[in-house]
Length: 182
Image 1 (tube, rainbow, N blue to C red):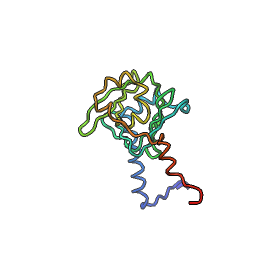
Image 2 (image 1 turned 30 degrees about the vertical axis):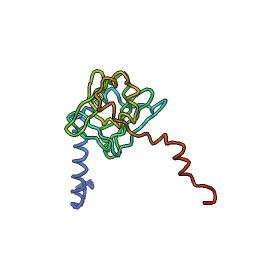
Image 3 (image 1 turned 135 degrees about the horizontal axis):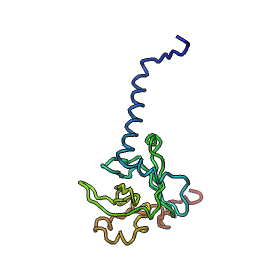
Image 4 (image 1 turned 180 degrees about the horizontal axis):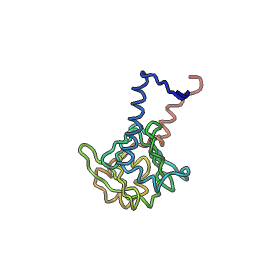
Protein backbone atom coordinates (compact mmCIF):
# COMPACT_ATOMS: atom_id res chain seq x y z
CA UNK A 1 0.00 0.00 0.00
CA UNK A 2 1.00 3.62 -0.23
CA UNK A 3 0.98 4.40 3.49
CA UNK A 4 -2.71 5.41 3.62
CA UNK A 5 -3.92 2.19 5.23
CA UNK A 6 -6.38 2.68 8.11
CA UNK A 7 -6.16 0.33 11.06
CA UNK A 8 -9.44 0.64 12.93
CA UNK A 9 -9.79 -1.54 16.01
CA UNK A 10 -13.00 -3.66 15.78
CA UNK A 11 -13.76 -3.07 19.49
CA UNK A 12 -14.82 0.47 18.50
CA UNK A 13 -17.41 -0.74 15.96
CA UNK A 14 -20.34 -0.67 18.43
CA UNK A 15 -19.57 2.94 19.41
CA UNK A 16 -19.19 3.94 15.77
CA UNK A 17 -22.49 2.23 14.94
CA UNK A 18 -24.24 3.99 17.85
CA UNK A 19 -22.99 7.45 16.84
CA UNK A 20 -23.90 6.83 13.19
CA UNK A 21 -27.43 5.70 14.12
CA UNK A 22 -27.85 8.64 16.53
CA UNK A 23 -26.96 11.18 13.85
CA UNK A 24 -29.17 9.41 11.31
CA UNK A 25 -32.15 9.38 13.69
CA UNK A 26 -31.70 13.09 14.47
CA UNK A 27 -31.62 13.99 10.77
CA UNK A 28 -34.69 11.85 10.01
CA UNK A 29 -36.63 13.40 12.91
CA UNK A 30 -35.55 16.85 11.71
CA UNK A 31 -37.21 16.21 8.36
CA UNK A 32 -40.32 14.50 9.75
CA UNK A 33 -41.28 16.82 12.56
CA UNK A 34 -40.94 20.10 10.66
CA UNK A 35 -37.85 21.56 12.36
CA UNK A 36 -35.96 21.61 9.04
CA UNK A 37 -38.89 23.39 7.38
CA UNK A 38 -38.90 26.05 10.10
CA UNK A 39 -35.10 26.38 10.01
CA UNK A 40 -35.18 27.44 6.36
CA UNK A 41 -36.96 30.66 7.32
CA UNK A 42 -36.52 31.06 11.07
CA UNK A 43 -32.93 30.08 11.88
CA UNK A 44 -31.82 32.15 14.87
CA UNK A 45 -29.22 34.75 13.96
CA UNK A 46 -29.19 36.82 17.17
CA UNK A 47 -30.04 36.61 20.84
CA UNK A 48 -33.43 37.42 22.47
CA UNK A 49 -34.15 41.05 23.33
CA UNK A 50 -36.34 42.75 25.89
CA UNK A 51 -38.15 40.93 28.68
CA UNK A 52 -37.17 37.25 28.60
CA UNK A 53 -38.99 34.25 30.05
CA UNK A 54 -37.56 30.76 29.68
CA UNK A 55 -38.43 27.20 30.45
CA UNK A 56 -35.97 24.67 31.60
CA UNK A 57 -35.91 21.44 29.67
CA UNK A 58 -36.42 19.07 32.57
CA UNK A 59 -40.20 18.61 32.73
CA UNK A 60 -41.43 20.50 29.70
CA UNK A 61 -43.88 18.39 27.69
CA UNK A 62 -43.38 19.30 24.02
CA UNK A 63 -44.44 17.53 20.84
CA UNK A 64 -43.93 18.56 17.23
CA UNK A 65 -45.63 17.22 14.12
CA UNK A 66 -46.52 13.48 14.17
CA UNK A 67 -46.23 13.64 17.98
CA UNK A 68 -42.44 13.70 17.77
CA UNK A 69 -41.48 13.93 21.43
CA UNK A 70 -39.12 16.74 22.45
CA UNK A 71 -40.00 16.60 26.15
CA UNK A 72 -36.95 17.17 28.29
CA UNK A 73 -34.84 18.30 25.32
CA UNK A 74 -36.57 21.47 24.09
CA UNK A 75 -35.77 24.87 25.58
CA UNK A 76 -38.33 27.64 24.94
CA UNK A 77 -37.53 31.31 25.45
CA UNK A 78 -40.16 34.01 25.13
CA UNK A 79 -38.81 37.49 24.43
CA UNK A 80 -40.34 40.79 23.32
CA UNK A 81 -39.44 40.15 19.69
CA UNK A 82 -40.03 36.41 19.19
CA UNK A 83 -40.26 32.87 20.51
CA UNK A 84 -36.86 31.15 20.58
CA UNK A 85 -36.49 27.36 20.39
CA UNK A 86 -33.35 25.33 20.93
CA UNK A 87 -32.39 21.80 21.91
CA UNK A 88 -29.94 20.34 24.39
CA UNK A 89 -26.48 19.67 22.99
CA UNK A 90 -26.94 15.93 22.34
CA UNK A 91 -30.09 16.58 20.28
CA UNK A 92 -28.87 19.67 18.42
CA UNK A 93 -27.37 17.85 15.39
CA UNK A 94 -29.51 18.90 12.42
CA UNK A 95 -31.65 21.13 14.67
CA UNK A 96 -30.31 24.71 14.59
CA UNK A 97 -31.78 27.17 17.13
CA UNK A 98 -34.90 28.93 15.86
CA UNK A 99 -36.32 32.45 16.25
CA UNK A 100 -40.01 32.72 15.32
CA UNK A 101 -41.54 36.23 15.39
CA UNK A 102 -44.83 36.54 17.28
CA UNK A 103 -46.74 37.53 14.14
CA UNK A 104 -45.84 34.09 12.69
CA UNK A 105 -47.49 32.20 15.59
CA UNK A 106 -51.12 31.24 16.16
CA UNK A 107 -52.36 29.63 19.36
CA UNK A 108 -55.12 27.09 20.07
CA UNK A 109 -55.82 24.09 22.30
CA UNK A 110 -56.25 20.36 21.86
CA UNK A 111 -57.07 17.45 24.11
CA UNK A 112 -54.79 14.45 24.28
CA UNK A 113 -55.48 10.98 25.57
CA UNK A 114 -54.30 11.77 29.11
CA UNK A 115 -53.41 15.46 28.85
CA UNK A 116 -54.53 18.69 27.29
CA UNK A 117 -52.17 20.86 25.28
CA UNK A 118 -51.69 24.39 24.06
CA UNK A 119 -50.94 24.23 20.32
CA UNK A 120 -48.61 26.75 18.73
CA UNK A 121 -48.92 26.87 14.96
CA UNK A 122 -45.46 28.06 13.90
CA UNK A 123 -44.94 29.93 10.64
CA UNK A 124 -47.82 31.50 8.73
CA UNK A 125 -46.91 29.49 5.62
CA UNK A 126 -45.38 26.40 7.27
CA UNK A 127 -48.06 25.81 9.94
CA UNK A 128 -45.91 23.39 11.97
CA UNK A 129 -47.68 22.50 15.22
CA UNK A 130 -45.89 22.47 18.56
CA UNK A 131 -47.92 21.07 21.45
CA UNK A 132 -46.90 22.20 24.93
CA UNK A 133 -48.46 21.77 28.35
CA UNK A 134 -50.58 24.65 29.72
CA UNK A 135 -48.16 25.23 32.60
CA UNK A 136 -45.29 25.78 30.15
CA UNK A 137 -47.47 28.22 28.17
CA UNK A 138 -48.15 30.07 31.40
CA UNK A 139 -44.47 30.11 32.41
CA UNK A 140 -43.28 31.68 29.15
CA UNK A 141 -46.11 34.22 29.09
CA UNK A 142 -48.18 33.01 26.15
CA UNK A 143 -51.38 33.79 28.06
CA UNK A 144 -50.46 37.49 28.28
CA UNK A 145 -49.21 37.59 24.70
CA UNK A 146 -52.41 36.12 23.20
CA UNK A 147 -55.21 37.30 25.55
CA UNK A 148 -57.98 37.16 22.91
CA UNK A 149 -57.14 33.56 22.04
CA UNK A 150 -56.88 32.67 25.71
CA UNK A 151 -60.44 33.87 26.36
CA UNK A 152 -61.75 31.38 23.80
CA UNK A 153 -59.90 28.44 25.40
CA UNK A 154 -61.85 25.74 27.23
CA UNK A 155 -62.02 25.97 31.02
CA UNK A 156 -59.21 23.45 31.59
CA UNK A 157 -56.75 25.68 29.73
CA UNK A 158 -57.81 28.88 31.50
CA UNK A 159 -57.60 27.25 34.93
CA UNK A 160 -54.15 25.72 34.45
CA UNK A 161 -52.10 28.04 36.57
CA UNK A 162 -48.54 27.27 37.49
CA UNK A 163 -47.31 28.72 40.78
CA UNK A 164 -44.92 31.60 40.28
CA UNK A 165 -41.94 30.79 42.47
CA UNK A 166 -40.13 33.91 41.29
CA UNK A 167 -42.43 36.16 43.31
CA UNK A 168 -42.49 34.55 46.74
CA UNK A 169 -44.22 36.47 49.49
CA UNK A 170 -42.07 38.81 51.56
CA UNK A 171 -43.02 37.01 54.78
CA UNK A 172 -41.80 33.69 53.37
CA UNK A 173 -38.51 35.23 52.23
CA UNK A 174 -38.03 36.87 55.65
CA UNK A 175 -38.72 33.59 57.45
CA UNK A 176 -36.02 31.88 55.40
CA UNK A 177 -33.33 34.45 56.21
CA UNK A 178 -30.96 33.62 59.03
CA UNK A 179 -30.97 36.04 61.92
CA UNK A 180 -27.57 37.40 63.03
CA UNK A 181 -26.11 35.25 65.79
CA UNK A 182 -28.10 32.13 64.89
